[in-house]
Image 1 (cartoon, rainbow, N blue to C red):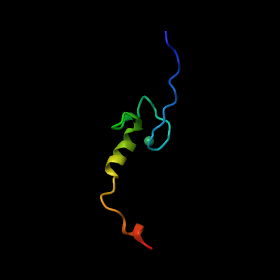
Image 2: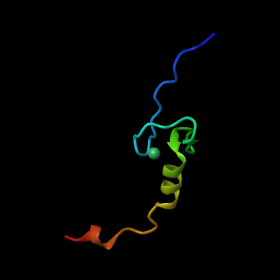
Image 3: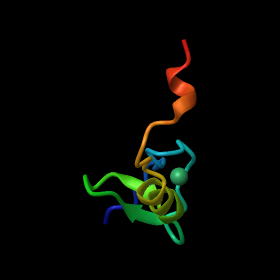
Image 4: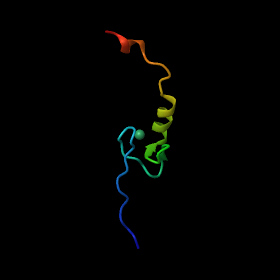
Length: 56
Ligand SMILES: [Zn+2]
């Protein structure tokens, strides 16, 4: 019988602990992430650089 507790798993995107019952998802590399964080990451990829980053 193996009754070791699960190690604390943290989301690699926000570093908050994952609830294995409700939050468990995995990114394209198989890393544990929140489903919400993964969705935000996919949806939040900037398609063009902000002009404000070019100010001198
Ligand atoms: Zn997260």
